[in-house]
Image 1 (cartoon, rainbow, N blue to C red):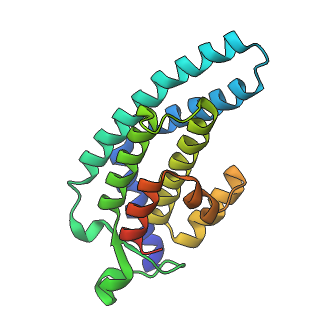
Image 2: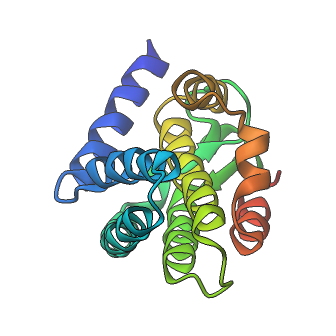
Length: 186
């Protein structure tokens, strides 16, 4: 019962912080756009779609950056997430070393999404889409982990996107992966 109450509060908090932004809608547009582009046989049309997706990526990067800044104002006690696979109510009070600060992880996601959108690594359009998808899936995993548990987040990732947490973590940009592991401890 304690767990359900805590989870409801976290879902409400995250939902309220996400409300002003269109992150989920933009994620869906990118995912659908990437698939459409990869299926496009006409090279000229494919290039047009990639350019359109560049603008969507930039918008998403900006919105997630603003979300992360907004969420950074959440009290420290509300931002602690248990590293244990299953949700443990008040783990931050019982064993603070088994927790991480989700505000820091959201900042890491904001930087990672922005870096991939800017394409400073000069990835091909296909590799950029793959890396951006991984960045977005890892961010979504973090949201589910914050609201429920790592086990639930990993199960949802597999159910929705048919990809494991480990593979997503291996597929994000090297900077995101290193910063994420430093905070989360994996």
